[in-house]
Length: 218
Image 1 (tube, rainbow, N blue to C red):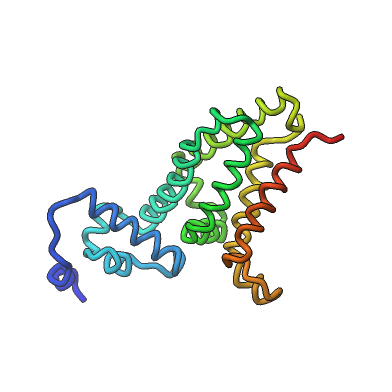
Image 2 (tube, rainbow, N blue to C red):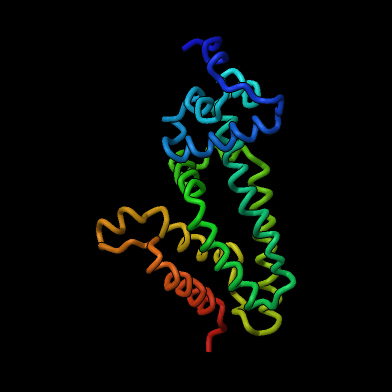
């Protein structure tokens, strides 16, 4: 199909550049998550967004630029919500429980985010390194976790040697694993890790694991 033919077949919409850009980005996230960076095409993304390849290129010049924008959107959304948790207004122990439960729930309901992170690891974070925006977002959430840790250490309820990045890794790894590896795990062990029956117990397990990790040694 030529670009002119695609223009004719594309549904007519009111002039809304920002709305179109958002649709393209939404479509790109889904397409990248399903077929990977190498398997995705701008034509497929355009079709999913209900527009033309010409308009995709107008807003995002290359597939790599669109892919980086998709990563920035996904990381930006989770970091924005984390900021909105207002952990600084909670007691340190309660703040850590809230962070753990939020991370668990977010990963469980945003499988495209999990897939995109997995894909970017396949590419050895080559595209992630090109985004200062993502690095800045992640530095800010680590600083917020560290501030809660410092309050808990000052009160004597957290171990002094706990590091914010290590704690972030502990929480994220559990939440990420149960979604990213659900099919291989179920095939090997006969247990659906994301089933409703397993969900509540795993959520409690994460909270108890974080609490035990933070608790001062006797």
